[in-house]
Length: 258
Image (cartoon, rainbow, N blue to C red; front, side, top):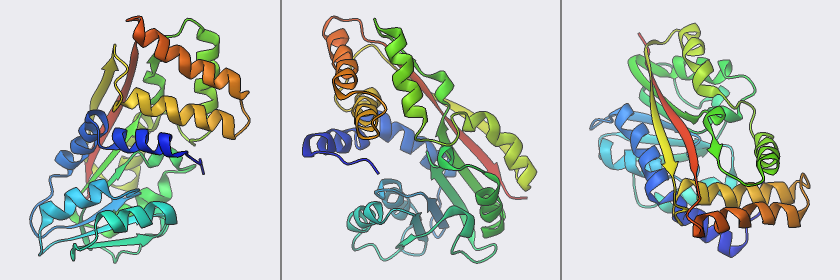
């Protein structure tokens, strides 16, 4: 688990509430299309931002379960959703959902599946828990779409390779449709959501990744701290010179239980 200082924590909170991450969260929300009275699962709910959005949409007659394996994240989610009687936040794992068979109208998972060594068990659990006609939305980055300018391309490649070590699968959107069909889902579709910047925006996805990747490289000992910080500083310098370029594509996959 990465440890963040106060300044980094503030940058990350700005990013989570900033335009890029909000747009990504909204794309999953819109794809799920929550209705009043729905019973929904937010799998890998993290700090509970999407959980809270969903609770507003389903209203007092609905229910939203936020599930996450991280106690620290769940504490933040409980604080964020405090006072909302239609929200339950639990510690749990995707392959063993605490949901009765055919009890959910919908389920959503935002940038979680890239951490699974095997996506079949969680997909099987989701299929079991969804009602016939139930909707599933999975959003994840395809990390092969990452394009990031640097005057030190070899170092950029190395930093991206180091970052890859924190996930189990870098191409979830490419693998997911076939796995969904194998699990029994139908009406499968995939929609791209591209992020492309020529400015290093303080609340943007690139700024968040710079903080996360630098911290990960240093804390895991994968790269010497001066070199990792020099990589981050180069992006600041490129931005000031008007030479910054970053692009990454997120994909929203929708499916339905027959």
